Length: 540
Image (tube, rainbow, N blue to C red; front, side):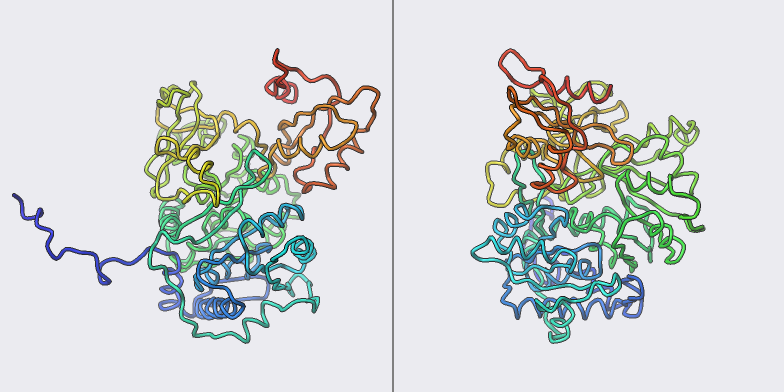
């Protein structure tokens, strides 16, 4: 018997096993780079020493408001410093961070407050009315903390305690609650889903920690990168980038309003080296007029996700000095977990069109993932022929714990030991995966998920509507937009403009159909609407 079969005394202990958590990154960064710039927003410049102290004060303030370990703290914030600080401040008091999409309607925000059980919500002054209206419908609403934005000219209303006042009164030496178990919940993110009500996706500390490690490798990061937060921090916690930056002593540059002039300004003035964004952001940059552009001379790495970027856009981005990497993931996978790893040599020799075609593929697993596969209906992997379609699935440490209070949906998503994405794709002979058709009920508009079922439900409330179906219509600006096909009741009338206004009053603006086509809907012999026929119509 080999000596390694004797495990006597080889146990886990405090010296050799510590629960993985991204909180450790900020503890370390503040210790070794206390004077290095960590956060930038307009005239605001905060060092890692400042960052650590403000996070401690935030954790203290939340505890004083009655937030206990395991409670949920929500935010309704744009990409401002308070949102970045919350990524550490909320878990530092042992709570779970719930960043909410600021573009949602009152009813959905109220549902998320109630379903997640938020005890406190940090609300930007711009979204204060949304928070107040959502809270007004609840028996046990969260405490509202207002976050004014003086840089944007948004002054406090005086109706609620403010973020800065609470921090000023809090304890700068508050002892952080570090997880005893890395499986403890870190964040709660709500996904659009395909059945109307969003599902609550739960992240653990381990997954977020390993996500930060894998992203540093994949994004070719060295020490001291400067990240512009273009991706909304309410989307998968900004793909976990806020948790990652202290790992490499980086600087987070906040961006409230995503416009081409603002991005070019940050590139020129702040020396930004990395940012992520949906193809719509890339389109805005390449189509920006000359007076909106600013010269920059640093190498800039860009992650894009949400839909395959158009080949022409990729080629023009390269000519402007950006290196674009196509990535793919879902809320359930902490953001990007599949990357299009560039193969130098043969791929470099391709012409611009073929290079762009290669870059449009979703790719291969990130380092912290164990695999990405495409499964046929019979449960077996499809052949790697680039033609046979199946469902894309992933497995690895950057996969959610599950859906909050929904064990049935969790079990369905984890069938066969893989996370089933609901996206249809193929596997190429080189092993790279490519999406061929999104899960048919989801429309991705400007990087936002829109449930066609939810939009159809809103349209069906109109008295004139007999039947409707909503599909994705290709759009040069947004990638995809909802297009509604409507059958009216006999003798009923409604205009396209009136029906769109009717839906806009019930749903967020980005979910509203941009066009309505009236007429009979194609159906199967059993009466099921043939959406594939409608998709062909809008593509034609």
